[in-house]
Structures are given as structure tokens and as C-alpha cells.
Length: 122
Image (cartoon, one colour):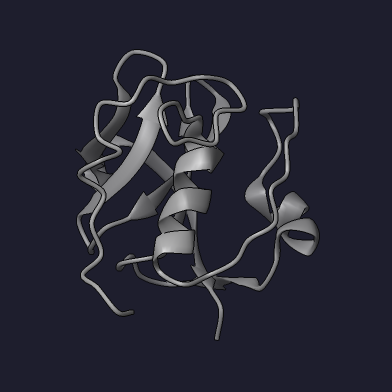
């Protein structure tokens, strides 16, 4: 990376289903943008079935694999109101994501029901 990773410009952007920025995001839009800023390329997929697990979409999004621990760039698959929700870990304790109520925000990982963690790339 040539410059320091930052998400400050994304914070507070409103939630929009299918939002891919730069002024509105859904949860996968946040993941796509953050991974792009880290130099990772994921394919954009839109799926209406929020009951799916990310593992069902892995063949279509790119080089993603399960990992044991959260850290910068790790995709967090979690559950929100019984539906699939995604975010990206900023470190071992916090994640950035987009919610209906708060838009793009940072929350502690312990505040969500984490299903799985996925690393991107090698």
C-alpha cells in the first residue's frame, strides 16, 4: 500500500441496498470498497437471499478463504436480525459495516453474532 489505510470518508454515509459508494453503501459495498483500498479485488455480487452464508458465494467473489482470527482486511460474516450481514475487520476487535439505522459505522466485533471470518488473497 502506498498510503495509510483509512475509512474516515466512509463513516456516516447512509445505507442503501445495492449501494457501492462513494456516498451510499450496503454491507457488501463497504467490504468491496475497503478491500479495494487494501489492494484486493473482489467481484461485485448482489443476492436477494439474505439467509445465505458467504461460503455459498465464495466461488463467485474471488480468492476468499476461512481464517481463524480477525485482523485488518478480514471479512466478517455475521448475523443481523436472522439475516446474513457482512463487515470488514479493522483490527482484532472492531469492524466497519453499514446498517439500516446508522449507515457506515464502526462497531466492536463482540456486538455482533459472528458466524465466520474470511481472509482475502494469499
